[in-house]
Image (cartoon, rainbow, N blue to C red; front, side, top):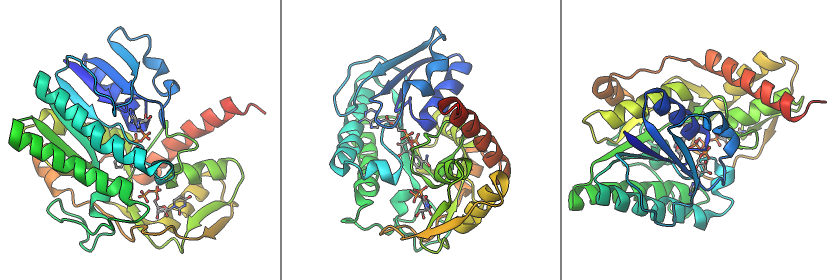
Length: 313
Ligand code: NAD
Ligand code: UDP
């Protein structure tokens, strides 16, 4: 099949492109390189069925494809808050453009949605039928609310125009190839310990997250795309940790002497997050395989190698 991956030069997108090529598909990767980069996909340039196009999804594009994995959108709070209006345009206008394309060429389209649609959740763990607890006017709203609207658009194009849709709600995902300046917690802690700096825990570190290794996530995403279920379906690893526990785990793996310092908690930071993955288990036959210790080891090895290459001193 001809598969379009928007945001394909980003962290998750680059792993997805790799897997799609390995399955024999033709992959068209669109990216504006805001948080992604050529270096994430440079190893795919020699693949005859891989094509990289610099394009901003805010602009329409005419293509002929069978599948659209729509991932284009900055995912780290640091980056989506850099230009919040642009984030909203990317998520809303970008999704309208990709839905228009899907409608015209009758392609199936999958939206990379997020656990952030649940906001600071009052239901724990989060099931897909929970409508969430989202602040509409806070500093995370440009991302949360525009992803919620992207989901709305998906369902309206589905009901109104019969577009073939899939929605995945991704929970905190980490792994090799995260940008060293990404700003999310796993990459921050790893980069900090490798550089001999203190780990910055926000608040008291008692807020929780559940961390999914990227290979597991991509597997779930591809199962959803090729299965009959529209979603939304949560995909994430239900093993939940406090941020302080994560800091200790990274510290113990890299440098047990590293210091942990506490910084102010950003506003609207969700207090708890854990996916209920009953739907993914039963409808997709999916189960996360890589647990935190193993996933961290692989991610640390990748960062070590990259930081050494960038800073040979
Ligand atoms: P990422 O920032 O590494 O990747 C996003 C990619 O989209 C980058 O390559 C970026 O350059 C590109 N992009 C951004 N705006 C664009 C635009 N206007 N036009 C074209 N390309 C654009 O982040 P990621 O972790 O790989 O996330 C990928 C997708 O998964 C995002 O939609 C994100 O919201 C979603 N998601 C990720 C997580 C996670 O934990 N990693 C969790 C929930 C949802
Ligand atoms: N966090 C932290 N130190 C950091 C970066 C993040 O303690 O250097 C915390 C952050 O406040 C949040 C959690 O880690 O509670 C996850 O943050 P991230 O930005 O990775 O993702 P999100 O909040 O979107 O789940």
